[in-house]
Length: 130
Image 1: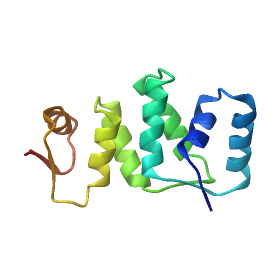
Image 2: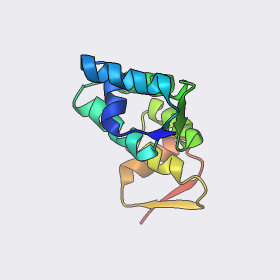
Image 3: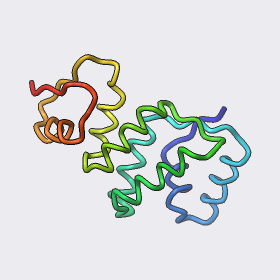
């Protein structure tokens, strides 16, 4: 299995650099690829900030990526939860942090916006303001 960096995933999803895009596609075709949650977090930020992709487009490309048979995600369940909350309007980073902590009894934060969004989208664990 081959783990990849954010720049490989961005090339694959953005399709913006001919040679690097082809090399990323070849890696995906010829290897089992492991993608960590931190890579997904960074990829979302790059696609939103540098490529100006909408939340809807980012959700779609992440769902498509998750469906590629040669790709193994660090935490597929957390990504599915995070994408659902993201689609409901929660910030992706906040949603992923919360989804990755599902085994915890509670999630503590100073971020009132995160706490409100978690309640609004029906997050599975309690979010408390510290």
